Structures are given as structure tokens and as C-alpha cells.
Length: 207
Image (tube, rainbow, N blue to C red; front, side, top):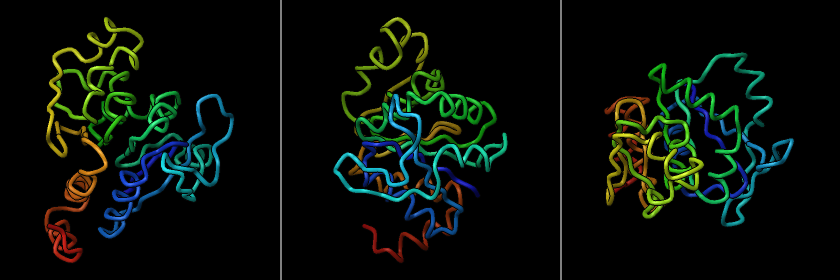
């Protein structure tokens, strides 16, 4: 399975790298893709996270688009962190990619700030259960353009607090950095199956 993990300046390091690590342990083809900051024309080769940890991406967004040649990966993942999530949300290509993949039934995953900041404006949370970093569900108007627009885009959605993750059909959302391992293991289960997930769980001495 080909999985793209998008890293924009200010991403949350635990959320991004925990998922990448466990998916690669599961034998998945994971690409880390650097995304430009809002207003920037090019993506950095080394992306600095919200806690000033530099991470070298496998390729930048321009190269990723060229290599995909109009196709989509099997799954995409948006880590949280600020301003990382806002930088992802500002990218029109990612907006279109996420929308297209959700409509095709491919897995779209986001954690922490990203469900509210990146996914809500696409409308894909409508009629779905989801979770995010505590309090971000109250700021949807800021990310969707207005409170009225947010109501339209998230009509009949149901935010679930105090859970590590929520899977609703092909959209996987997570709560925050402290739940990244549980979120990542659900991701592994979806991509590689429960047997592989159990082997990784046992081999990595998870609780």
C-alpha cells in the first residue's frame, strides 16, 4: 500500500513520526512529503516541526505530484500541530486530493488540529463521527470561513471527545500526540491487517 504523509512547517513531530514508524514496520510504502508554508512557493527539503525538530522528507510536494501523475495513493495522512495543520489547509492541491480520495473510498487520516483545520473545510466530516484536539471542535468557523459555513460543511457530524481515535467509514481521526500510538496502530490494522498489527504490538512492547 502506498501512503503519503504530508509534513508542513510546524507539524507535530510525535504524531507524524509515530505513524510513519509503525506503518513502515508493517511493510507499507510510506512517503513523507514536504509541503510549503502558507504563502511560500516551494517546499523545504528539511521540514521543521512545532518543537523545532528538523525532519528530512522523502520528496517535496512538486515531485510527489509529478510521480503520482494524476493518480492517488492508497491512503493519506495529515499530522496536527500548529501552524503545520494551517499550512496543509492552505494548500489547494491537498484540499482537492483529500476530497477526491474520500469520494473514492480511500483512507483519509488526520489527527489533533488537522481534523478541524484540514478536513472540516472539505465537507467530509458531514454526517460522520470524528475527534480532534480538545477545543478545536469549537473553532470550526475560523477554519471554514464563518460559523454558518462551518455548520453547512459539518452538517449532522458528531464530535466524540475523550477517545484516542474515531474511524467512520474511510475517514480516521485522532485526538492528539498522546494518542498517536493507538491511532497509528489502527492505521496499521487498516493497511496491513489485524495479524500484522498484533505482531507489531507485541514486538514493540506496547501496553
